[in-house]
Amino acid sequence: MSDIIRELCERYTGLTTEEINTIRTLSKTLQPLANLEDADIFVDCPCSDGVNAIVVAEAKPSYVPSSYKKTVVGLLAKPENEPAVARTFRLGVATKQMKATTQENGKTIQSVEPIFNEAGSRVIGVLIQEDRDEESRPSPERIHFSQESYEKIANMLSHMTDGNGWLAECIQEGLVMVDKNGIVTFRNSIARNLYRELGYLDDPLGKPYRNFNLVPDGGDRDEYGDFSSVDVLVSGHSLVLRRIALKDPNMDYALSINDVTLQKEQEKQIVLKTVAIKEMHHRVKNNLQTIASLLRIQARRTNNEETRKVLAESLNRILSIATTHELLARSGVDQVKIGEVVQNVKNSTLRYFASPSFNVRVRVEGGDFEVDSDVATSVALIINELLQNSLEYAYRGRDKGLVRIVITEGELYSRIQVIDDGCGFDLNNVRKNRLGLSIVQTLVKDKLRGGLEIESGPGGTTATFDFKNSFKNELIGLTGPM
Image (cartoon, rainbow, N blue to C red):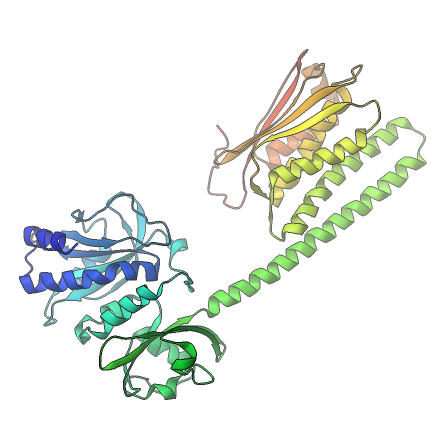
């Protein structure tokens, strides 16, 4: 990498040999920094034209996907595409969390720090941290960091001059360095601000670290080792502390302080939400089963066959919804596997038609993917109606047959087909007189925002409907299926 940096700088920039060597030295920290931040890291240097910058070094994270498919070293960074880079070159100050367009025409979020020459007189480059989007910014807790990553960063920082303290400010954690005498010789702004939040009135810089030790029992080195990790709770803050031994003869160790309070609180809220969702779906299921029991009792008390049939159909509809809520109660989230929903409806419907002479098989085929509760409930009702129609009408006068329920997952819209090999029916006549089909049409159109197609003939009937996979993001796919 160093030879490439030298070649690019000599060809495209006006940097001196000493300044190029500074960039080459700093490039050695890029890979551990990329792993530490779960982000793409770059160094850009100013071109001689005074307008553009050129990418001279890069590092992609080892533990999360990079935003880039190819290397961008040697490509230009234009001001109109990367305003954060242009601003930092122009003003000599850091630029945080600004949108940019990558060399591969992708969208990203950039944080940029200036790199000064040894004299601190001018900006000779910028260090860029890129996240794919706002949702993929570094998480508060990174459990996969290696000892090597921490050691490289800490030891590089221990040799840096004050003018190059920009690297410590790029790290999304508090950083404290302690010398052989136990004195804090360095702390970044995150560590300083964190100590203030914890209630410390003094800045730890220049003072004995024992006065600022966050481990309740003192945290002796023998207890935690040279590379240690310990979780502590201080003044309502959940902290993860890591100690790294330094190779500098005058330094003892570095301490990283990661505040994971927000993450812990979010985890607690997720647990509470999961319990609430489970309880909600469990109660809905119980209520629906109670209603089904009342309908069953009413059906037994009537002597009118038509009334008994209508009550039985309503009973099946209610139970198809109840089985969906039962699955949601088990998962504790607002999503459920569509295959499980269809399988449960199939089993429930077959129980209704069970008899020694009934020999029609029902087979579920295709993918199994997650959908939200709104989609699952509507699909359950639709499958119940279509399957019940096939089992009740398609095989009159026959003792066997096959009904296939085929699930096909799509990127935005998915499709389900109910295919029987029965006798078929007159579509025009059925559409006018059958309540079940009217329910299906209404659910597909109004609830699933999809389309319904039915083909029927002497060889059987195929009912196909498509549905939007989720209603959580209403900004996607408003035009409906193709």
